[in-house]
Image 1 (cartoon, rainbow, N blue to C red):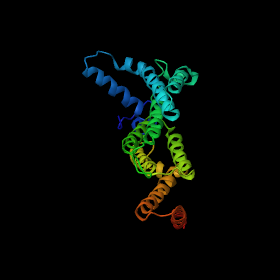
Image 2 (cartoon, rainbow, N blue to C red):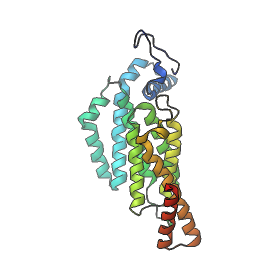
Image 3 (tube, helix red, strand yellow):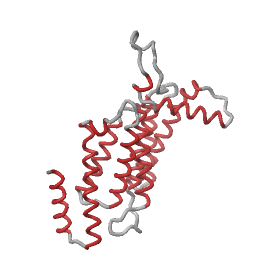
Length: 255
């Protein structure tokens, strides 16, 4: 696939298709087709491509429900959100059977990334003094993997990484920083960025593009905050001492 050169596109120059498109949608369809074949299904690849938007439309609606339930803490809110997602015209346009397009797969990947992000930040009564939780590790990894899938499917991945970066920055600025935020964001950013750079149309854009500098700066910022947090636990620093060290570290980093 990645060596496919289409001589009929952009005639007479041709086009290296495998390195100029986001491959997530095509790889997903082939993977599903092969998996169904292993299970004994005789469905054709063409039929799989026709049905992928509908299948992923269902999964996107379910994930929106899980996302809303996680944020609100109410299952009824999740059910209502899933219902709304299922009938939103913009989503229906991208989830109708036969409408095989990047957004058909990318919408599910986008919502999955956001759900894993908020799930990684779930409060646990057993976590004391801002310590990291098992969820921050597990769902931080899953968030990064879902983001890589999102990048492989659609160019709108820039919106996703900036939204998560902005949310992490807002939590830290609002006094809600904890080690679980550090673990979740660090795992998301490291796995997501490493995977994104392997997608041919993206390359090193996550490290070079100005529109993706916010997530990078947030990543560096949470490392500073975590270093101060570790020192706070060891030396039992007062809030004034913590803010002094944060300010000193931020000033040194800016310089």
